[in-house]
Every structure is written in structure tokens, then in C-alpha cells.
Amino acid sequence: MTTAEIEMPFASMVTFDPISLPEANRLLAQWEHKMGPCVRGNGRNWSHALIHERIPVAVTITSALIRETVGGANFLNRENCIELSRLCAVRPGLCRVALRLWREFVFPHLGYEYAISYQDADIHNGNTYRFDGWQRISRSRSGTDLRSGKIGRDKWVWLWPNLPTS
Image 1 (cartoon, one colour):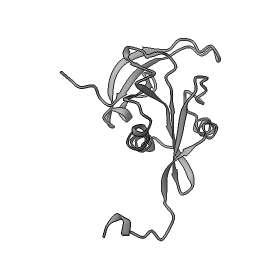
Image 2 (cartoon, one colour):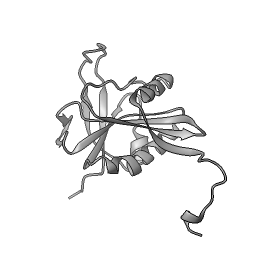
Image 3 (cartoon, one colour):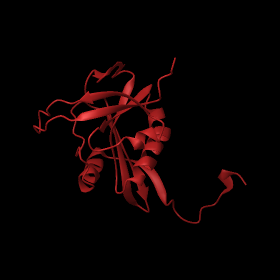
Image 4 (cartoon, one colour):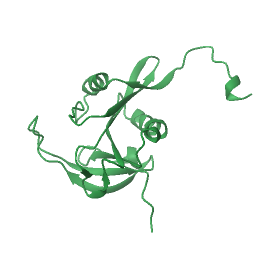
């Protein structure tokens, strides 16, 4: 029997679907994401939700880079790199699932050679990215947020796909 021949007697239990940025931001606030909503004035973004039985359980937000280049990795720029700017879920194990779905099914269609994600060096250990095969390439520190006045944080920069080793 091929996959085309499988009959499903019920609707999908799990999907990974596009959602609006306002809805993604609402979920980030509801789940108390440490960075809060993704509010950027620099244009493009794509938001997706992992949905279980019609209830969102994880969210990803993809954004254009804020700076011209990535901190500590100047070869990554707005032309060749996109940022996975938020990854959040109702429980930790689902972040790994959402990350893998994003990497396998969203990123390849965005038209960028690289993806990066910043990981707060004080709050998270980086295992979500490490276990998914991402490469930690640099450390960065953000400046004070001009909108909120929040002091910048130390962050690790994770890269997908990995750079070739010599």
C-alpha cells in the first residue's frame, strides 16, 4: 500500500500551518516567551504554528535580519540569511518538534542559503539547536532596545546549514 492509498478516517491530529504575526505574538505572550512579541519594522516575516487537535502548541516566527550582517559572522547578510526570530511552545519538548518542522518544510522554501537563530546565553543551554544539527558560530551582545529601554543580552548565534570544515 502506498501513502496515497492510506485512508484517514479522521482529521489530522497534528499540523504545522502558517498563522498571522499578531496570532503568533499573542501565543508568545500567553506562553510568557522571555523575549516577548516579535515587533520589527523591517518588513518580511513568516509565522507558523504546530497545532494539535486544533489547538496551537508551538510557534515559530521567521524574520529578515535587523542588522546588515549577523553579529560575529559578517559573511551572513540580508541577502543570504534569514533569522528564526522566535521559537516557543507550551512545553519544552515541542520546541524541538517545531524547530525540525520549520527547518525541513519552511526554511527550504524561503530562498535563503542560511538561517540563524539567537539563543539567550543566560536562559537556555542551546540543546534544542545542537540536537537538531545546528552549528554554534559566534557570541553576540545586543544593545539597549530603543523602544523598551531593556538592556541587551549575551546571545549565542546558531547557524543552519553548517559551514563546511576544512
